[in-house]
Image 1 (cartoon, rainbow, N blue to C red):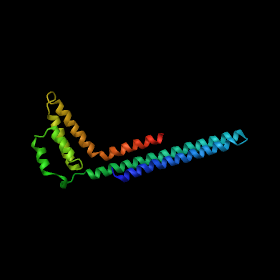
Image 2: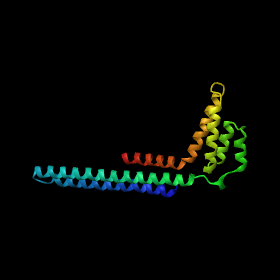
Image 3: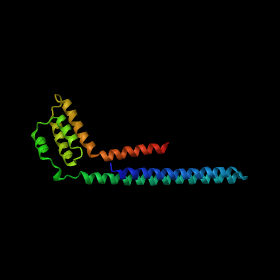
Image 4: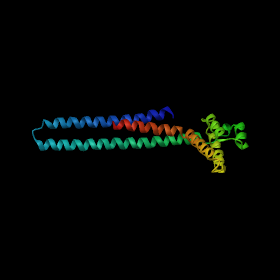
Length: 180
């Protein structure tokens, strides 16, 4: 994942955390000040108003965070889409010859996917070959081969979506820190 996406996502969470901390500090300050008031009704009203202000500030911080997360995730998806468009210059003729030969096993396709993990065009050419082989494999006799071909497809999709997966992992990690 592009480092700027990581930095921007982290900054969104940091900003929300600071806003919530500032709102909590203001709430605590108001509650402490209300304890010194002689008029208990005024103290309760001040506390209630501070609670509402705190709740509104947390809601606003969460709304801003969620909107920023959604926009940033959309940017990551758009970036992946732009990078995953097929490019004739990324086609490796020797690999295509092997793919077209019909002699490749799931292990061969997996090795090829690993070899071209950063070449989205080749990954997109490997996946349909794995799907085709999976569909033509005998369901009773070639059960292990079908499972292995399914893993090839999953591996290709993992490489194609690695940045989005990394973004979602970081997002979940940062969200977990926000709860603490």
